[in-house]
Image 1 (cartoon, rainbow, N blue to C red):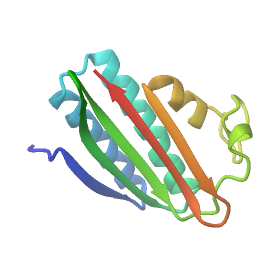
Image 2: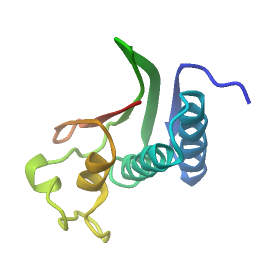
Image 3: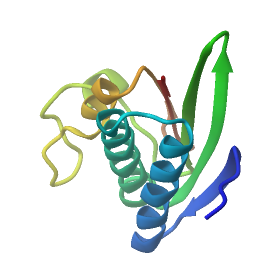
Length: 134
């Protein structure tokens, strides 16, 4: 399977979540991430894809292979036009959940990656960006 260094995938159903994980795995392998690095990035992508679908009503995942000096990495952006997050600080607290989950999605994903950013406007949607550097 040939994979582009940039691209976008829809996140509109469960099958799209599977495809997002497969895409991230391929990109991590392209970048020669260790198995542990791959697992962390795939886990974060899976959580954020699911959040985009369940809490955001669907959206997209964009990716880019990025470079900074001698470092290379994988950057992912998850975007939706859902209800947004009213209190980002609260949402980033371990154990807090707006649904029936364990409340580990956003803070857990942040711990798995090098860079993490979340932006949200109530009524307009949410954008989460993550980067894992090699």
